[in-house]
Length: 455
Image 1 (cartoon, rainbow, N blue to C red):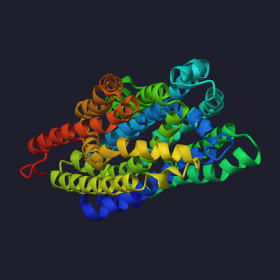
Image 2 (cartoon, rainbow, N blue to C red):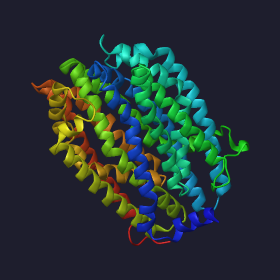
Image 3 (cartoon, helix red, strand yellow):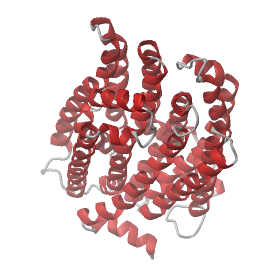
Protein backbone atom coordinates (compact mmCIF):
# COMPACT_ATOMS: atom_id res chain seq x y z
CA UNK A 1 0.00 0.00 0.00
CA UNK A 2 1.11 3.60 -0.65
CA UNK A 3 0.83 4.51 3.02
CA UNK A 4 3.06 1.60 4.07
CA UNK A 5 5.57 2.47 1.36
CA UNK A 6 5.76 6.04 2.69
CA UNK A 7 6.65 4.77 6.17
CA UNK A 8 9.17 2.25 4.79
CA UNK A 9 10.86 4.97 2.73
CA UNK A 10 11.25 7.21 5.76
CA UNK A 11 12.92 4.32 7.59
CA UNK A 12 15.05 2.66 4.90
CA UNK A 13 15.19 4.78 1.72
CA UNK A 14 18.30 6.67 0.61
CA UNK A 15 18.42 9.84 2.72
CA UNK A 16 19.73 11.97 -0.16
CA UNK A 17 17.14 10.79 -2.66
CA UNK A 18 14.38 10.95 -0.07
CA UNK A 19 15.31 14.49 0.96
CA UNK A 20 15.23 15.58 -2.66
CA UNK A 21 11.92 13.78 -3.22
CA UNK A 22 10.29 15.42 -0.19
CA UNK A 23 12.02 18.79 -0.42
CA UNK A 24 11.47 19.41 -4.14
CA UNK A 25 7.66 19.66 -3.85
CA UNK A 26 8.01 21.56 -0.56
CA UNK A 27 10.39 24.06 -2.20
CA UNK A 28 8.03 24.44 -5.15
CA UNK A 29 5.18 24.93 -2.67
CA UNK A 30 7.13 27.63 -0.87
CA UNK A 31 8.10 29.33 -4.12
CA UNK A 32 4.44 29.33 -5.04
CA UNK A 33 3.76 30.60 -1.53
CA UNK A 34 6.14 33.46 -2.26
CA UNK A 35 3.86 34.41 -5.13
CA UNK A 36 0.87 33.98 -2.82
CA UNK A 37 2.36 36.48 -0.39
CA UNK A 38 3.73 39.04 -2.83
CA UNK A 39 1.35 38.98 -5.78
CA UNK A 40 -1.09 41.32 -3.99
CA UNK A 41 1.76 43.79 -3.44
CA UNK A 42 2.85 43.51 -7.06
CA UNK A 43 -0.61 44.48 -8.35
CA UNK A 44 -1.25 47.06 -5.62
CA UNK A 45 2.07 48.73 -6.41
CA UNK A 46 0.79 49.38 -9.94
CA UNK A 47 -2.43 51.08 -8.83
CA UNK A 48 -2.81 54.86 -8.88
CA UNK A 49 -0.97 56.03 -5.77
CA UNK A 50 0.58 52.55 -5.73
CA UNK A 51 3.43 53.48 -3.39
CA UNK A 52 1.10 54.87 -0.72
CA UNK A 53 -1.36 51.99 -1.17
CA UNK A 54 1.47 49.48 -0.78
CA UNK A 55 2.65 51.21 2.38
CA UNK A 56 -0.90 51.04 3.73
CA UNK A 57 -1.26 47.33 2.98
CA UNK A 58 2.20 46.81 4.48
CA UNK A 59 0.82 48.07 7.79
CA UNK A 60 -1.50 45.04 7.78
CA UNK A 61 1.38 42.57 7.58
CA UNK A 62 1.96 42.34 11.35
CA UNK A 63 -1.65 41.16 11.78
CA UNK A 64 -1.40 38.75 8.83
CA UNK A 65 1.90 37.43 10.15
CA UNK A 66 0.39 36.92 13.60
CA UNK A 67 -2.46 34.87 12.12
CA UNK A 68 0.10 32.68 10.32
CA UNK A 69 2.03 32.40 13.58
CA UNK A 70 -0.98 30.96 15.41
CA UNK A 71 -1.44 28.45 12.58
CA UNK A 72 2.25 27.49 12.98
CA UNK A 73 1.81 27.18 16.75
CA UNK A 74 -0.55 24.27 16.15
CA UNK A 75 0.57 22.89 12.77
CA UNK A 76 4.34 23.02 13.16
CA UNK A 77 4.02 21.88 16.76
CA UNK A 78 1.67 19.01 16.00
CA UNK A 79 3.27 17.82 12.74
CA UNK A 80 6.63 16.68 14.22
CA UNK A 81 4.87 15.12 17.23
CA UNK A 82 2.64 13.13 14.88
CA UNK A 83 5.70 11.99 12.88
CA UNK A 84 7.49 10.89 16.06
CA UNK A 85 4.38 8.90 17.04
CA UNK A 86 4.41 7.29 13.58
CA UNK A 87 8.08 6.38 14.09
CA UNK A 88 7.03 4.70 17.34
CA UNK A 89 4.34 2.77 15.36
CA UNK A 90 1.54 4.60 17.21
CA UNK A 91 -0.67 5.91 14.40
CA UNK A 92 -3.70 6.13 16.70
CA UNK A 93 -1.78 8.52 18.93
CA UNK A 94 -0.77 10.54 15.86
CA UNK A 95 -4.42 10.81 14.76
CA UNK A 96 -5.42 12.09 18.20
CA UNK A 97 -2.80 14.82 17.85
CA UNK A 98 -4.20 15.80 14.44
CA UNK A 99 -7.81 15.80 15.67
CA UNK A 100 -6.89 18.10 18.53
CA UNK A 101 -5.10 20.34 16.05
CA UNK A 102 -8.32 20.77 14.04
CA UNK A 103 -10.28 21.79 17.14
CA UNK A 104 -7.57 24.17 18.34
CA UNK A 105 -7.23 25.88 14.94
CA UNK A 106 -10.98 26.55 14.69
CA UNK A 107 -11.14 27.93 18.23
CA UNK A 108 -8.14 30.21 17.68
CA UNK A 109 -9.56 31.45 14.35
CA UNK A 110 -12.81 32.59 15.99
CA UNK A 111 -11.02 34.41 18.82
CA UNK A 112 -8.47 36.12 16.53
CA UNK A 113 -11.14 37.27 14.06
CA UNK A 114 -13.29 38.86 16.76
CA UNK A 115 -10.42 40.68 18.50
CA UNK A 116 -8.84 42.19 15.39
CA UNK A 117 -12.14 43.15 13.72
CA UNK A 118 -13.11 45.14 16.81
CA UNK A 119 -9.77 46.87 17.36
CA UNK A 120 -8.27 46.98 13.86
CA UNK A 121 -8.17 50.76 13.37
CA UNK A 122 -6.46 51.78 16.64
CA UNK A 123 -4.02 48.89 16.14
CA UNK A 124 -3.13 50.12 12.64
CA UNK A 125 -2.50 53.65 13.95
CA UNK A 126 -0.24 52.12 16.58
CA UNK A 127 1.61 50.22 13.83
CA UNK A 128 2.69 53.47 12.18
CA UNK A 129 -0.23 54.45 9.93
CA UNK A 130 -0.45 58.00 8.58
CA UNK A 131 -3.40 60.00 7.26
CA UNK A 132 -2.35 58.92 3.75
CA UNK A 133 -2.15 55.18 4.46
CA UNK A 134 -4.82 54.38 7.07
CA UNK A 135 -7.74 53.98 4.64
CA UNK A 136 -5.82 51.47 2.50
CA UNK A 137 -4.80 49.50 5.60
CA UNK A 138 -8.36 49.31 6.97
CA UNK A 139 -9.87 48.38 3.59
CA UNK A 140 -7.44 45.48 3.19
CA UNK A 141 -7.38 44.00 6.69
CA UNK A 142 -11.14 44.05 7.40
CA UNK A 143 -11.77 41.75 4.42
CA UNK A 144 -8.70 39.59 5.08
CA UNK A 145 -9.85 38.96 8.67
CA UNK A 146 -13.14 37.52 7.41
CA UNK A 147 -11.12 34.62 5.97
CA UNK A 148 -9.04 33.90 9.08
CA UNK A 149 -10.63 30.46 9.50
CA UNK A 150 -9.51 29.49 5.99
CA UNK A 151 -5.95 30.67 6.59
CA UNK A 152 -5.74 28.78 9.89
CA UNK A 153 -7.02 25.50 8.42
CA UNK A 154 -4.90 25.64 5.25
CA UNK A 155 -1.65 26.62 6.98
CA UNK A 156 -2.22 24.74 10.23
CA UNK A 157 -3.17 21.35 8.80
CA UNK A 158 -0.87 21.23 5.78
CA UNK A 159 2.10 20.17 8.01
CA UNK A 160 0.13 17.02 8.85
CA UNK A 161 0.15 16.17 5.15
CA UNK A 162 3.85 16.80 4.51
CA UNK A 163 4.97 15.12 7.74
CA UNK A 164 3.47 11.84 6.47
CA UNK A 165 5.64 12.02 3.36
CA UNK A 166 2.92 13.36 1.03
CA UNK A 167 5.03 16.29 -0.11
CA UNK A 168 3.37 16.59 -3.53
CA UNK A 169 -0.06 16.81 -1.95
CA UNK A 170 1.22 19.50 0.42
CA UNK A 171 2.58 21.37 -2.58
CA UNK A 172 -0.80 21.19 -4.33
CA UNK A 173 -2.45 22.71 -1.24
CA UNK A 174 -0.38 25.85 -1.67
CA UNK A 175 -0.42 25.82 -5.48
CA UNK A 176 -4.22 25.70 -5.74
CA UNK A 177 -4.62 28.82 -3.63
CA UNK A 178 -1.69 30.68 -5.16
CA UNK A 179 -2.74 30.13 -8.76
CA UNK A 180 -6.32 31.14 -7.98
CA UNK A 181 -5.06 34.26 -6.19
CA UNK A 182 -2.93 35.24 -9.18
CA UNK A 183 -5.95 34.85 -11.48
CA UNK A 184 -8.37 36.71 -9.22
CA UNK A 185 -6.12 39.64 -8.28
CA UNK A 186 -6.17 41.56 -11.59
CA UNK A 187 -9.86 40.77 -12.08
CA UNK A 188 -10.92 42.11 -8.68
CA UNK A 189 -8.34 44.91 -8.28
CA UNK A 190 -8.53 46.41 -11.79
CA UNK A 191 -11.38 44.69 -13.67
CA UNK A 192 -13.99 45.32 -10.99
CA UNK A 193 -12.20 48.42 -9.65
CA UNK A 194 -12.09 47.12 -6.07
CA UNK A 195 -8.49 48.18 -5.39
CA UNK A 196 -6.97 46.87 -2.18
CA UNK A 197 -10.34 45.39 -1.18
CA UNK A 198 -10.15 43.21 -4.29
CA UNK A 199 -6.66 42.03 -3.34
CA UNK A 200 -7.87 40.98 0.11
CA UNK A 201 -10.97 39.26 -1.30
CA UNK A 202 -8.86 37.32 -3.82
CA UNK A 203 -6.64 36.11 -0.98
CA UNK A 204 -9.40 34.81 1.28
CA UNK A 205 -11.25 33.08 -1.59
CA UNK A 206 -8.01 31.35 -2.52
CA UNK A 207 -7.27 30.33 1.06
CA UNK A 208 -10.81 28.98 1.34
CA UNK A 209 -10.26 26.66 -1.61
CA UNK A 210 -6.93 25.50 -0.11
CA UNK A 211 -8.61 24.82 3.24
CA UNK A 212 -11.28 22.65 1.61
CA UNK A 213 -8.57 20.71 -0.26
CA UNK A 214 -6.68 19.98 3.00
CA UNK A 215 -9.80 18.83 4.84
CA UNK A 216 -10.94 16.57 2.00
CA UNK A 217 -7.52 14.89 1.77
CA UNK A 218 -7.03 14.37 5.51
CA UNK A 219 -10.55 12.96 5.87
CA UNK A 220 -10.12 10.64 2.86
CA UNK A 221 -8.67 7.18 2.25
CA UNK A 222 -5.32 8.11 0.67
CA UNK A 223 -3.80 9.50 3.85
CA UNK A 224 -2.01 7.52 6.59
CA UNK A 225 -3.45 9.67 9.37
CA UNK A 226 -7.12 10.51 9.08
CA UNK A 227 -9.29 13.18 10.69
CA UNK A 228 -11.88 11.34 12.78
CA UNK A 229 -14.64 13.24 14.54
CA UNK A 230 -14.02 11.36 17.80
CA UNK A 231 -10.58 12.99 17.93
CA UNK A 232 -11.74 16.54 17.07
CA UNK A 233 -11.76 17.91 20.58
CA UNK A 234 -9.55 19.85 22.96
CA UNK A 235 -7.44 17.58 25.16
CA UNK A 236 -5.38 19.99 27.29
CA UNK A 237 -2.45 17.57 27.54
CA UNK A 238 -2.24 16.97 23.77
CA UNK A 239 -2.80 20.61 22.80
CA UNK A 240 -0.34 21.68 25.47
CA UNK A 241 2.29 19.36 23.96
CA UNK A 242 1.70 20.80 20.48
CA UNK A 243 1.92 24.35 21.75
CA UNK A 244 5.09 23.61 23.74
CA UNK A 245 6.81 22.43 20.56
CA UNK A 246 5.05 24.91 18.27
CA UNK A 247 5.94 27.91 20.43
CA UNK A 248 9.30 28.18 18.64
CA UNK A 249 7.89 28.71 15.10
CA UNK A 250 5.10 30.77 16.70
CA UNK A 251 7.64 33.13 18.24
CA UNK A 252 9.64 33.18 14.99
CA UNK A 253 6.58 34.39 13.12
CA UNK A 254 4.81 36.45 15.78
CA UNK A 255 7.98 38.32 16.64
CA UNK A 256 8.19 39.13 12.95
CA UNK A 257 5.04 41.15 13.65
CA UNK A 258 6.79 42.97 16.48
CA UNK A 259 9.80 43.56 14.25
CA UNK A 260 7.62 45.01 11.48
CA UNK A 261 5.79 47.21 13.98
CA UNK A 262 9.08 48.45 15.44
CA UNK A 263 10.60 49.02 12.00
CA UNK A 264 7.52 50.75 10.56
CA UNK A 265 7.17 53.15 13.48
CA UNK A 266 10.86 54.10 13.42
CA UNK A 267 11.03 54.26 9.62
CA UNK A 268 7.94 56.49 9.56
CA UNK A 269 9.62 58.70 12.14
CA UNK A 270 12.94 59.04 10.27
CA UNK A 271 11.98 58.46 6.62
CA UNK A 272 8.23 58.94 6.16
CA UNK A 273 5.85 56.96 3.92
CA UNK A 274 8.54 56.13 1.36
CA UNK A 275 10.60 54.34 4.02
CA UNK A 276 7.55 52.29 5.09
CA UNK A 277 6.86 51.43 1.44
CA UNK A 278 10.51 50.38 1.04
CA UNK A 279 10.19 48.07 4.05
CA UNK A 280 7.08 46.50 2.46
CA UNK A 281 9.15 45.75 -0.64
CA UNK A 282 12.16 44.49 1.33
CA UNK A 283 10.08 42.20 3.53
CA UNK A 284 8.54 40.75 0.35
CA UNK A 285 11.97 40.11 -1.19
CA UNK A 286 13.17 38.60 2.08
CA UNK A 287 10.28 36.13 1.86
CA UNK A 288 11.54 35.18 -1.58
CA UNK A 289 14.74 34.06 0.16
CA UNK A 290 13.46 32.54 3.40
CA UNK A 291 10.40 30.61 2.19
CA UNK A 292 12.32 28.29 -0.19
CA UNK A 293 14.77 27.32 2.57
CA UNK A 294 11.79 26.56 4.78
CA UNK A 295 10.79 24.19 1.96
CA UNK A 296 14.14 22.43 2.32
CA UNK A 297 13.65 22.05 6.07
CA UNK A 298 10.11 20.77 5.52
CA UNK A 299 11.55 18.09 3.25
CA UNK A 300 14.07 17.09 5.92
CA UNK A 301 11.59 17.21 8.82
CA UNK A 302 9.72 13.91 8.21
CA UNK A 303 13.04 12.04 7.76
CA UNK A 304 14.56 13.60 10.87
CA UNK A 305 11.48 13.25 13.10
CA UNK A 306 10.58 9.70 12.03
CA UNK A 307 14.10 8.33 12.42
CA UNK A 308 14.64 10.15 15.69
CA UNK A 309 11.51 8.44 16.98
CA UNK A 310 12.84 5.12 15.62
CA UNK A 311 16.27 5.87 17.24
CA UNK A 312 18.05 5.57 13.89
CA UNK A 313 20.59 8.32 14.56
CA UNK A 314 22.74 7.72 11.51
CA UNK A 315 19.86 8.75 9.25
CA UNK A 316 19.15 11.76 11.48
CA UNK A 317 22.76 12.91 11.03
CA UNK A 318 22.64 12.50 7.26
CA UNK A 319 19.34 14.36 7.02
CA UNK A 320 20.66 17.32 9.02
CA UNK A 321 23.94 17.61 7.10
CA UNK A 322 22.18 17.67 3.73
CA UNK A 323 19.65 20.18 5.05
CA UNK A 324 22.37 22.49 6.38
CA UNK A 325 24.43 22.46 3.17
CA UNK A 326 21.36 23.09 1.01
CA UNK A 327 20.02 25.96 3.16
CA UNK A 328 23.36 27.73 3.37
CA UNK A 329 24.06 27.39 -0.35
CA UNK A 330 20.67 28.88 -1.20
CA UNK A 331 20.94 31.89 1.10
CA UNK A 332 24.47 32.66 -0.14
CA UNK A 333 23.32 32.58 -3.76
CA UNK A 334 19.97 34.36 -3.39
CA UNK A 335 21.21 37.10 -1.06
CA UNK A 336 24.26 37.77 -3.24
CA UNK A 337 21.94 38.32 -6.21
CA UNK A 338 19.85 40.80 -4.18
CA UNK A 339 22.91 42.72 -3.02
CA UNK A 340 24.39 42.96 -6.52
CA UNK A 341 21.16 43.77 -8.40
CA UNK A 342 18.73 45.34 -5.89
CA UNK A 343 16.93 47.54 -8.42
CA UNK A 344 15.93 44.48 -10.47
CA UNK A 345 14.03 43.02 -7.51
CA UNK A 346 12.48 46.33 -6.43
CA UNK A 347 11.04 46.88 -9.93
CA UNK A 348 8.97 43.71 -9.49
CA UNK A 349 6.79 45.71 -7.10
CA UNK A 350 6.88 49.32 -8.25
CA UNK A 351 8.29 51.46 -11.07
CA UNK A 352 8.57 54.73 -9.12
CA UNK A 353 12.18 55.92 -9.56
CA UNK A 354 12.39 57.49 -6.10
CA UNK A 355 11.16 54.31 -4.39
CA UNK A 356 13.52 52.15 -6.48
CA UNK A 357 16.53 54.31 -5.59
CA UNK A 358 15.69 54.45 -1.88
CA UNK A 359 14.91 50.74 -1.53
CA UNK A 360 18.04 49.69 -3.46
CA UNK A 361 20.17 51.68 -1.02
CA UNK A 362 18.34 50.23 1.99
CA UNK A 363 18.63 46.63 0.75
CA UNK A 364 22.43 46.78 0.62
CA UNK A 365 22.38 47.46 4.38
CA UNK A 366 19.41 45.39 5.49
CA UNK A 367 20.24 42.15 3.64
CA UNK A 368 23.93 41.58 4.54
CA UNK A 369 23.23 39.14 7.40
CA UNK A 370 20.99 37.02 5.16
CA UNK A 371 24.10 35.63 3.43
CA UNK A 372 24.60 33.07 6.23
CA UNK A 373 21.00 32.88 7.47
CA UNK A 374 20.62 29.35 6.09
CA UNK A 375 22.62 28.11 9.09
CA UNK A 376 20.09 29.63 11.49
CA UNK A 377 17.07 28.10 9.76
CA UNK A 378 18.63 24.64 9.31
CA UNK A 379 19.72 24.32 12.95
CA UNK A 380 16.60 25.82 14.46
CA UNK A 381 14.20 23.76 12.35
CA UNK A 382 16.19 20.59 13.12
CA UNK A 383 15.78 21.26 16.84
CA UNK A 384 12.06 21.55 16.13
CA UNK A 385 12.01 18.27 14.14
CA UNK A 386 13.72 16.52 17.08
CA UNK A 387 11.06 17.74 19.50
CA UNK A 388 13.49 19.99 21.40
CA UNK A 389 11.02 22.74 22.20
CA UNK A 390 12.99 24.63 24.85
CA UNK A 391 16.18 25.00 22.79
CA UNK A 392 14.23 26.00 19.70
CA UNK A 393 12.27 28.53 21.75
CA UNK A 394 15.40 30.19 23.14
CA UNK A 395 16.94 30.48 19.69
CA UNK A 396 13.70 31.88 18.25
CA UNK A 397 13.65 34.56 20.95
CA UNK A 398 17.34 35.37 20.62
CA UNK A 399 17.38 36.87 17.14
CA UNK A 400 14.31 39.07 17.28
CA UNK A 401 13.28 39.72 20.87
CA UNK A 402 16.70 39.80 22.56
CA UNK A 403 18.73 41.26 19.68
CA UNK A 404 16.82 42.85 16.80
CA UNK A 405 13.99 44.78 18.45
CA UNK A 406 16.22 46.40 21.10
CA UNK A 407 18.80 47.29 18.44
CA UNK A 408 16.13 49.06 16.34
CA UNK A 409 15.57 51.46 19.26
CA UNK A 410 19.12 51.61 20.66
CA UNK A 411 21.27 52.17 17.55
CA UNK A 412 19.62 55.47 16.46
CA UNK A 413 20.56 56.99 19.82
CA UNK A 414 24.27 56.46 19.07
CA UNK A 415 24.37 57.34 15.35
CA UNK A 416 23.82 60.58 13.48
CA UNK A 417 22.16 58.88 10.50
CA UNK A 418 19.05 57.58 12.26
CA UNK A 419 17.59 55.87 9.19
CA UNK A 420 20.84 54.00 8.51
CA UNK A 421 20.94 52.95 12.17
CA UNK A 422 17.46 51.41 12.04
CA UNK A 423 18.36 49.40 8.93
CA UNK A 424 21.71 48.31 10.40
CA UNK A 425 19.97 46.58 13.31
CA UNK A 426 18.92 43.68 11.04
CA UNK A 427 22.35 42.47 9.83
CA UNK A 428 23.91 42.87 13.29
CA UNK A 429 21.14 40.77 14.86
CA UNK A 430 21.33 38.16 12.07
CA UNK A 431 25.08 37.62 12.35
CA UNK A 432 25.04 37.40 16.16
CA UNK A 433 22.07 34.99 16.10
CA UNK A 434 23.60 32.73 13.45
CA UNK A 435 26.85 32.50 15.42
CA UNK A 436 25.06 31.67 18.69
CA UNK A 437 22.75 29.12 17.04
CA UNK A 438 25.63 27.35 15.27
CA UNK A 439 27.57 27.02 18.55
CA UNK A 440 24.47 25.77 20.38
CA UNK A 441 23.65 23.15 17.75
CA UNK A 442 27.27 21.99 17.51
CA UNK A 443 27.31 21.28 21.25
CA UNK A 444 23.96 19.46 21.06
CA UNK A 445 25.08 17.45 18.02
CA UNK A 446 28.36 16.44 19.67
CA UNK A 447 26.55 15.25 22.79
CA UNK A 448 23.45 13.62 21.30
CA UNK A 449 23.95 12.87 17.60
CA UNK A 450 27.67 12.18 17.24
CA UNK A 451 28.99 9.13 15.38
CA UNK A 452 28.95 7.10 18.58
CA UNK A 453 25.16 7.32 18.71
CA UNK A 454 23.61 4.45 16.75
CA UNK A 455 20.30 2.66 16.72
